[in-house]
Image (cartoon, rainbow, N blue to C red):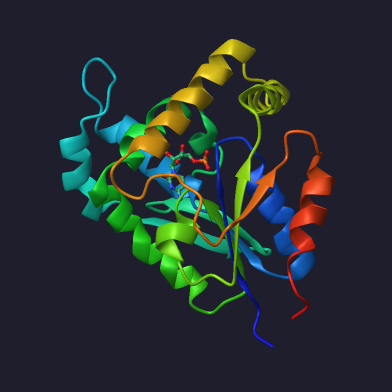
Length: 224
Ligand code: C5P
């Protein structure tokens, strides 16, 4: 039987991407982290469309979109992100990108621009895609939809540990403020806001660990 298309949406730092990656490995699916695309565009904008005060010139970014070639390449079963030929998997995690990405992601032109890239990957099936609007807008016909949430404190704690491990100097309060502000912009934007699809299964992992979350999600997926 056909491999499924799975949509995983939810708040920042609920573990969507790392959990999707593991589920993809176990089920033999391709994993696509759609947040990476918005981060890629933001990274381009920081380098090429910055105002003197370091904010992003959105008008310039929108006129530059045709110049931005963002693509995933499947390297040893994992999708790696390339911007105009250069790998940017590391750069898109910089705090400056995290601080600006939601401003960029609320623009309709940016979202439209990325729609084809996302839908093309899902056409053949066998994909698990994580983001904010996958179940609602990008893949409304997905076979399975999950919506992940956890308390703000728990999410801030996880993200802080992750950044600390990566050697970033930050503090938990700064991390928490970034999460709160991104979630607010993501949920309140006019185009494709972050929200649970009517037919999505809610997964709250505030008090369960990563492995338990994976098991819970897998318990809903039928053998194929
Ligand atoms: O998933 P991640 O936290 O890396 O996503 C970064 C940002 O990209 C989100 O805060 C959101 O603004 C945007 N995003 C989006 N739609 C998606 C995935 C990410 O708007 N499908």
